[in-house]
Length: 230
Image (tube, rainbow, N blue to C red):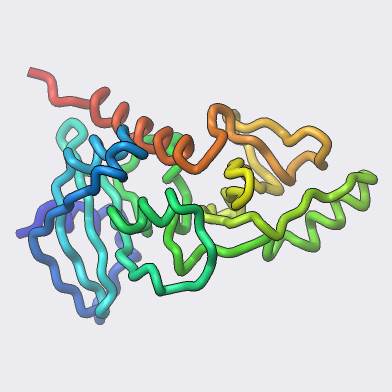
């Protein structure tokens, strides 16, 4: 029995349907030198993981799992070819996808981590350019506050939260922003010169690598703080 997969299904019970065609096999992951140098914390975390290769209705995933205390936790990452979409990504974003895939689901995750309550993280086929759904809201907020909108054509949303918040980066400057209309996050700062509850900085995060390494640190701390006692 693939225990980590059973734990995943138990925690994320709605993801796999009874009629789904599911195949599970033991897997491996080999990260590149470039990946290890670019994402050192994430690389160490991934190389600690137990890996399962999972196919659900002919869609490929990898389940990366770790142990916290007496339970397993981890990420179900979707594996896609780079050609899945013609959207432009930062090279470091594509590097991450080429090595580990994008996070579709997380199970038994640490409280307050970037993975909490997200529809996906990093998955290329889900990424979008610009402010999308929030374009009209953003322009209305700028008009109501007599604020000049910032250019959004080079923004790539790479994380979508269940409540609609989007984490994005600028293709030119690499700056990461959170766009959220309603939140209680204590780790963000309103973007100066913009209406409140539109664009935010994430404290301690300037670029995509910062974001990803902070996420890896959150999970690493979760594992190390819950090691089994002897």
